[in-house]
Structures are given as C-alpha cells and as structure tokens.
Amino acid sequence: MEQPCPPGFASTTPAASAATPATPGASGVAAPSAAPGSGGTAAPSKGSDGGTACNDNDLSIGLSLWRQDSGQNVLVTATNVSGKPCTLYHYPYVGFGATIKGPLGPYGTPPRAIATIAPGQEAYAGVYLFRGGEATTAVDSLSLGYQDRAPGSNRDVGRLDLLLAARTGTLNAGHAAKVTYWNLDLRAVEDQLFRPGTS
Image 1: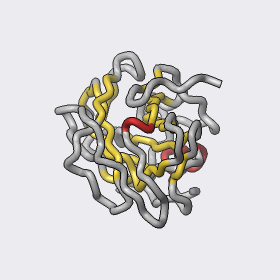
Image 2: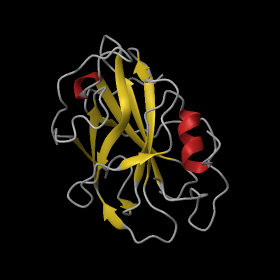
Image 3: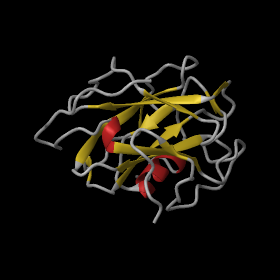
C-alpha cells in the first residue's frame, strides 16, 4: 500500500479507478447529458452531523486522470494523514489559478453519508472540466479549499495551490466546469461523472 505524501502536497501517482469509464464518445468519454449544474483553510469546526472539519494539515491530496477519459475529468483523492477522524463537508472549493478563480459550483447530488474519514482512509471528488465542443482554456494549477459544516462557509479563505505539471500535466477547462460532492465511494463519483442519473 502506497504511503501517503506529506500533508498539503499532492501525490504524483495516479489513483486506481474502481470502474472503467463509459464508452468514449466524440470527446473521448461519454459526456454528462446536461451541463453540471495558496493558503490554508480556516480552523476546524465541529458539527453534530459530522464532527471536526478537515483542513490542509489533516490531508494528503492526490490528483489523477482516468486512463480512457481524454482529460475531461480529474479525480481528487484526499487521504487522512492525521491521528484523528475528520470530515470533508459538501464539496471542495476548486479553482484554476488566475485563469478560472472559482470556486466551481457543485455537480450532482450530495451523497447519503457525510464523508468522515478515519486516519488512513480516503474520500473522493471529481472535477468535470468541460462539455464536449465547449471552448476551453489551458490551466497549469488547481486551487483547493474546504468547507465547514455550514454550506458555503470558508469561501474567502486562502486555498492550497497545486501545480499540475508533475501531477496531471496541463489541463483544459471550460466555464461549465463543476465539482462533485465529497464521497467515500469512488464508484459513486465515477457514476456521477460518466453515467449521470445512475447514482
């Protein structure tokens, strides 16, 4: 089992996918049927429905692509490297440097279970970068931030800035870019990205 990288840094090793993406279409992957609806994070907060919110110091972040996807989606894998459970609330705040500042809006519906991760456990979110045929912009960095229990919290807090060159290479993003909710189930994230309406 691969050892997690230090807190706040992304792994350069692509994460293993639990499912093969849907049969590629014109853009290299079956696109969703409709457009999907550098600093630390704030101090942890507690909530009766999930517990202490995760922050940069609790997590090792990995970015990877699906092999048959033609770069239309990015998988964000968050591994708890702290000594205590923490919760990834709602969806991550994602932007692309000065090009697309974000945060991107959410794609899909929230999972039934809140993404509380024990030490060594992982949670996942998928970034939907563009629709087929949409004009895109090349991006070379991805910013990542976390919410507390209250939806929309921490929007103005500085985010971790991840350079993409050694992780995924330059990506293309459009103005329809969205991000899924955090989920403990990788297959559920893949279903939302590649098979919308099945999760």
